[in-house]
Amino acid sequence: MTQPIRIAVSGALGRMGLAVAAAVEAAPDLVLAGRFDRPDAAGAGLVDRSAALQGADVVVDFSTPAASVALAGEAATLGGPALVIGSTGFSPGEIDALAQAALRIPIVRAGNFSLGVNMLMGLVELASAALSPAEFDIEVTEAHHRRKVDAPSGTALMLGEAAARGRGVDLNQAAIRARDGITGARAEGAIGFSVVRGGGVIGEHSVLFAGEDEILTLSHSARDRGLFARGALAAARWAVARAPGAYDMQDVLGFRR
Image (tube, rainbow, N blue to C red):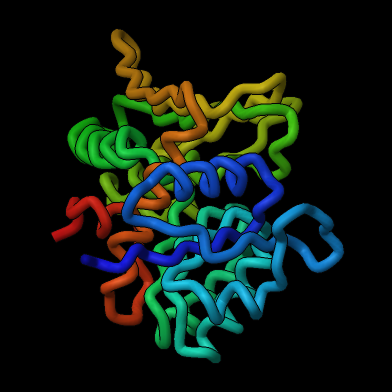
């Protein structure tokens, strides 16, 4: 009989941490190896990070950028376990630190673990390649619950990157992330971001291709937080047998050839 994959959960007291732990306990091929959160956190069943790393095949992490980087550094020093990271809002320096850790362990990092969102990314890239920037403006819109602390969301940035790839441009150069006051006319080729925060919205994302005479909207709506937990665990099953490297859901789902 195949041994179950041992999963530890980082950010265990957060919404996603709780959802991941519940999904692990419901899966016959997985076992919960430990739950941990920030050092000053208190909760039944929590262990410290080092103990969780020692007992896990994969750590699924929904915490903060700083906590994710520290986790990756310790895991890399130990030579494992594999990491699945769903934290968002990383700085360029933090992304570089994760890349260094991925030289020693497999790390799957994604702003969104939904199959539908990852399909949407592919469609956005195709549409942005086909629709001329002289004729169609691109706007990425997203809405999340009032407690989300970063903006635009990691998923919105992923969609912006997909649009930029389709047009062969650098998102950092094309992105418009804030508008206020007299902004002037929209620049050709700009990729705009619009953000809504309120209530208990799980996640709504749309990419608008606006022409003079027609508008194309590609969108995704999340109805259950469990879909992200299930996607993260699919990534964990995939990562456990992988060589060290930096991966994302496009790799996990076989969309990247």
